[in-house]
Amino acid sequence: MKHLRTVDDVMTHAVISVNRRAPFKEIVETMRRWRISALPVLSDEGRVVGMVSEADLLLKAQGADEARAVSAGQLMTVPAVTVAPDASIAGAARLMARGHLKRLPVVDDDGRLVGLVSRGDLLKIYLRPDKDIAEELRELITARLIPAGSATVHVHVSDGIAHLHGSIPDPSLNDVLIRIARTVPGVVDVTARLDAEVPA
Image (tube, rainbow, N blue to C red; front, side, top):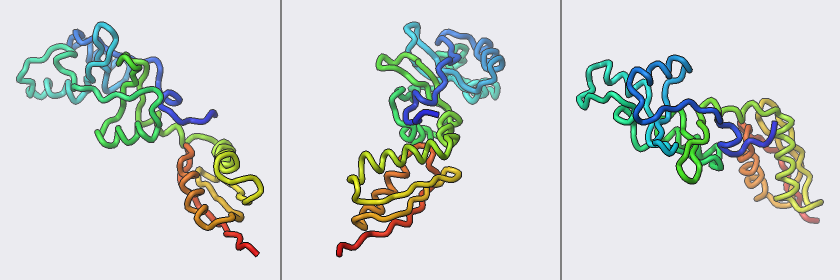
C-alpha cells in the first residue's frame, strides 16, 4: 500500500451526482438505486453548487417545506463544503468534524467535481500494514531528522502503535521524534524509550 497522504489517495473517483434541475422523485430514486444518502448537485458546467441529502428530502416528507422545493437546486444545502484533491487527509478530517459532515465533494481548481471523500475513505489510512508504516517512519527519521551516525533509533510498529527505542544525542529530540511519528498516516499512537547520550 502506497503512502496515503492526500484526499486524492483515498477518495472515490466515480461519483454519482445530479443536475440542479433534477426533480424530487429522480433524486430519491438515485439515492435508493445507489444506496447513498447524499448527492453533489452540479451546474451545467460540472461545478459543485450544493449538496442534497436525505435530511433535505425529509423536510418535505415532514411537511416542513414552506418554499415548495421540487428540484435539486431548490432542495440542496448551500454552499457546498468542498475539498481539493491535494488536501491532506488530516485537513479533510478536520473539515468534516468541524461541519459534522459525512462526506465532501472533491473539486479541481475550477470547482468541477473530480471525486468524493467519506469518513470511511479517510479511515483507510488505518488499514496500512504495520511494516509500511515502520518503513516510512524509518525513512523520515534517517533522511530528515537525525544526522548520520548521531543516533540509533529502532522502530517497531504493532497494530498501528509506533514503538521507538534507542539513543539520541540530544534529549530535546525525544519530543521531536514523537511528533514526527504522529504525522505518519496510519499511526494510532507512539511510545518512546530513547536515552540521551551524555558526552564524555
